[in-house]
Image (cartoon, rainbow, N blue to C red):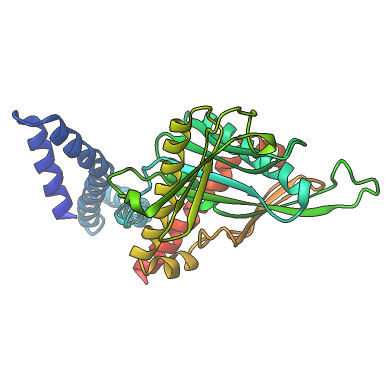
Length: 351
């Protein structure tokens, strides 16, 4: 803690000096703002400990019975506050995910369940779009593959804003829906699913792709897979030969724009692969937390007949499915997941 306080003072002095470049100011200001709440917490803890020492002396004094009783009452209240002050600092000192501040690429795909799964995938995608709007984030559709009946086979979007990946990263996994399809005459409840993947957006400096490792195919977009039928070969498929990853973009009428978008998605997928490989302990650590982030893991069930949404990782059930699907109540689930993740990581550190 002393080291952090000293570093905070160094940054304050540095930012007050002249001769800094714009890049230096941005870098130092970012570190300063990150340390501010931690140092404020440390100051509050130091003040509380100093007050504790002073009150202890008063409580042990025999000079004034009334003053002694008052000190003992304040001492009890302060002793109850101290553990919470210490806990806040420990939380603030937990290692942060370096990608938390990044934008995210959100991918939703219909899973088992045919057209009903595709309809649910479309609803999930719109849920995240509305949620992004409510948080003041920007949502840009990258790809949309429609079924022709209102459903999405798959859809992806770039979500931009503050702490996007931090809040969306635990949404990766299988989302299951239970409801009576409109086409079901007998009223029988069907179960289907959609998968969600959330990737941190990667920049060119994060992942350098050798053009020789790419196979680029162009073809004509159209039919249910594209938003409109093009008469030119504007759709682009980029295959990364070393990994076999393939990305198709066809929503723009410009081949150049589709290629740029496909490269953005490919770069982010490669970055996520490298991210997982780089941190060998990540899988074990995340498994002990609220979820692995693996899109094969069932994380949530949306039961429409009962009006409930259940997150299986933290055993949280909300009976407000309409508000969840509108994006309004999604924060309640995400906040609970983030709190559970923090508590688990804190327990691991303290244990």
